[in-house]
Structure formats: structure tokens, C-alpha cells
Length: 409
Image (cartoon, rainbow, N blue to C red; front, side):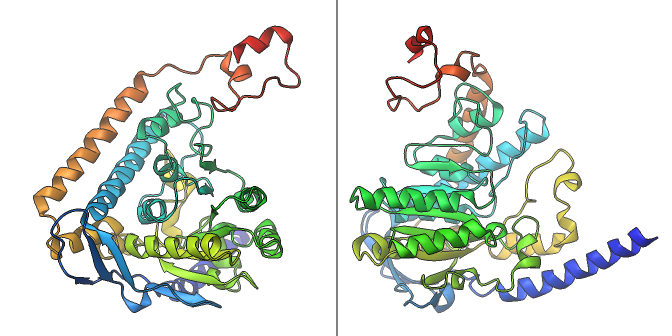
């Protein structure tokens, strides 16, 4: 009886925290609405006007609401978001078919952040994130086949089939990281290396709202400010981090204000144009102007649970902290892909048929990647001992190796 009463009380408290948290975090869920001038070709710059509530600033000015993009870039971002979503949907299907082992954290609904980030940074900048990492791996030089192959544990995987869902890497993407908040301090270290080498680049260290209360996050903030590191700490606030752990334990859920001496900017993370503009502004702040670290908060939303499971109620009973109606409302009114599609059509930049063709191309790419990944063999046993570093970065020798094993390099 005591456990039953405790369970009911816990559910009431969870609902109470949920209501308070949601009221605070719905301030920038809007879309750009104005287009000034129609382009004559795909490469001609056009000016868009974001809505005034696309950004909120803390100890800094907001970026310009006027954004210059091209028709070609808008269509590219649209297709990339479609490809990312289809890849994540394929990953979910493969997991539920018991072809993927371990955990699988999906970013369906958050595509504007990974794609918008890539369009706002330099190819030699660095990115590091947590376990919801598949889109960033693709955008940072990986492939859909490489991600799917990694989930399936195949040789074609981006980490040769041994990293799984949470450990994907490219030369400029320092991975998904499974330890909550650990990537923030590692990201500060990467930024330190960039400053030490006098590189004109920065590091975007992404973390979720569920990691926002980790001590190492605040320690990284402190060190980055002390050393004036070119690090952009970026909170992906999908509003239900670690299944609402952040909502229940954060006295200040406005994460862009929590960095003490470091200025912060809250961004509409469901609007890819706002994301791109904020990232370009952040990069200019840290690299070109040398003002040191910055904190971004992308207000976004995930449609699925915290992670995929064979039976959803086992791993993330999200029905206890949000309703099906809420998810459907977000899908129909705030979806980043549908939002960009609507404006591309309203602005007369592409027809419905042209966009459907891009959808078809994204589906064909993902379907082909799944087929090829399934055909790829599993890793060789010898790879466990020899294939440790990425190709081209192997050391001449390694401690603990037998002399006869060196030939594997």
C-alpha cells in the first residue's frame, strides 16, 4: 500500500514539475516569415527576416534578424534534414527488428540543429556531442551507410562496427559520448588545443538539458572563461532530457543564462535558418573577434522516447511525462522540415513536386545504405588488436604490443 501511495505521489510531482518546465521553455518556437526579393538563380543571395523572438540574449546582443541565404542552400538543407530523419527512422526499424544491439538514441525532430550547425561553421572546426549523435556524424564527413553499418556492427561502419550507436567519429567530429556531460569538458580541451596551436577555428561542445547539472559542465565553463578558449557550449534543450531529470532538478531551466561570466544566447532550435544564423554569429564571436567562450541554448523537441527499446515502456515510459496529443501538436505545428518546406513553397523557390523529388532521393539513399550495410561482413577478430587509430594517424609503435604484431599497421 505504501508503495502504491508513493507511486501516485511521484506521478503527481512529476506532472507538477512538467507543467512548470514547459511554461518556461516555449518562448522561441516560431519560424521565419519574411522574404525580401526573389532570386533569379540558385546561387543568388536572398535576404530573409526572422521573427523577433527567434533569439533571447544574456549579457550580449542578439544576432541580426536579417539573414542572407541562397535558394540552393535552402534546398540543400531541406534534403539533408529529410535524409537525416529517414536514417533515424531506418535505425529505429532495425533496432525493433533486433538487428541493433545496445542503446539507440534518436534525434527525430531535432534535425535543424545538426544540419543548421554544419551550414554555419567551417569544415575544420570541431564538434563533439553526447549519445544522440548520428546526424552530426553524417554532417561532419561521415555517410549514412557508415552510421547504419556501425549500428549493425559491420566492417563498413564509421567505427568499423565496434563503436555502436554512441561512439561515432570523423576527423572533425569527436564523437558521441556515452557518459552524461563528459563531452563538455573534452570539448573544452579540444578548444584549448586549437588555441595552443594558434588555429583560427573553434569547437562546438553539445550537451542535452539532462546533462546541464553535471559538475564537469560548470568546471568546463570556468576553465574556458579563465583561458578565453574558442569554445561554444551548446545545450540541445529537447525539453525532456534524461526523461525529465533536468526539469525536476534545475532551479534555473533557462540554460543560456547559467554560465556565470560567459554570455549566452537562446535560439529557436526548430528553425534551421535561426540555427544557422546563431552558429555563424557564435563562430564570429569566438574566432574572428576572439571574445572567448559562448553558450548557446537550442530550444528543440524530440518526437521519440529517450532511447529506442523493443518495448517502449521498458526503456522510456514517456507517456508519464507528456501526452500523445502534445507530440502530435509539435509534429503538426513546429516540425523543422515541414516548416522549411512551407516557406520554400510560399516564397515560390520550389514547387511541391520538386520537393517531393528531393524526398524521394533521400529515401533512395537511405534504403540503399541499409541494404549495403546489411551485406557488409562483421569485424575481423584481429581488428580488435590492430585497428585502434583512424587510418593515417597510427603511431609507429604502441606500448604493450608484441613485436610480431607490428606488421598489422
